[in-house]
Every structure is written in structure tokens, then in C-alpha cells.
Amino acid sequence: MILLRHGQSEFNLHFSATRRDPGIIDPRLTPLGHSQAEQAAEALAAEGITRIIASPYSRALQTAAPLARRLGLKVLVQPLVRERYAFTCDVGSPTTALSAEWPHLDFSHVEEVWWPAQEEPADQVLARAALFRAEMSALGDWSSTLVVAHWGFILAMTGQSVANGTWLRCDPTEPALTEVSWKHH
Image 1 (cartoon, helix red, strand yellow):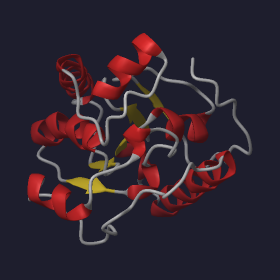
Image 2 (cartoon, helix red, strand yellow; image 1 turned 180 degrees about the vertical axis):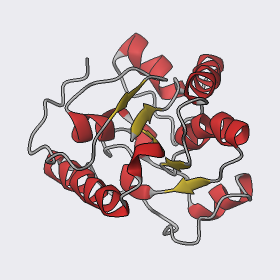
Image 3 (cartoon, helix red, strand yellow; image 1 turned 180 degrees about the horizontal axis):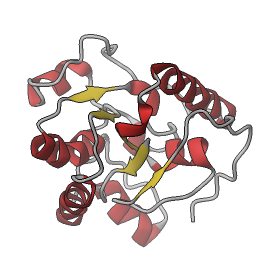
Image 4 (cartoon, one colour; image 1 turned 90 degrees about the horizontal axis):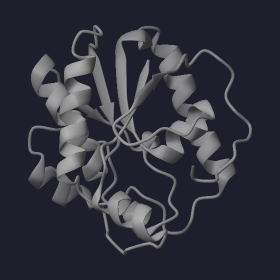
């Protein structure tokens, strides 16, 4: 499968400049982030993608939208691929708000408040990644799946730090990671 990190968000823009949490809840994409999403859609359009899974954060849904439009696919919303809860940006939008903004997406399986109430320990993120890995392995047809996720989740899946709007391939049948370095590169 292909793991795509969402495009640059308002949080990423401010945090990269100051290294301080700017206090933005469920940040949206910046103009650069939208451009990164469009570039990813163009680059990935010929990859034979038949399934798009995205985290419920607005930045991930916005990143998935151009490719979903281009390929005529629905985005499957999956809270398991959300970001590690550690900053204000990791407070999401309630499902009722997401449903109003994205009426064509199915949120019926997502709890109203789907993000943790406090910082998520590293082992919980690794366990979440292992569970997602197992679910994708069980599907059997994971090779044509695109997952729009986040820095921390992709790190927990692969051990690699990826920049906004970039992607890498991941074989979910490989063993899950048991530890990673959480230093932001």
C-alpha cells in the first residue's frame, strides 16, 4: 500500500517556523498544502489505486479529495490512521461537523469524539499501527490502497519520517515495529 502524509497544514507552517504549538484545532491545509495534495493526486493517478483510506482530520480529508475526484473513488474514513495525539492540532472536529462539511463521506462508524483526551503514549500509537497493519493484511488486496495519514502514524508504520505531501510504500504483511524514534526531523 501507499502511505501519503497530508499536505502542509496551518499547524505545520507555524510550528516549523517557531517550534511552538500555535494552538490550532484540526488545522486545514495551507495554499502550499492544497498544491501538494494536487501534485500527489497527479503523481499517484497512474498507480492503480482502487481504495483510498484517510484519517478523519480535515487536513487528511482535504489531501485525499483531489485523488478521489480524479479516480472517481470514495474516501473511506478510518480513525486508526489518525495522528499521534500530542499537540493542539491533534484535537479533531466532531463527527457531526465533519459530516456537515463532507456530506458525501460515511462517518457512521466514527464516534462523535474520535481522538484521545490526552497525549497518546508511543506504545499505543505503535499498537494502533500494528492493528491497522493486521487489518490491511487480512484484506489481501492492500497493494492498490492509498492511506492518507500523518507524520506520527507513518513513522509508527515504517520507522521513516516523511515530509508533507510525500509518500512511501508499505507492505503490511511485514512485522510491526516495536519502537521508533519520535524526534521530529
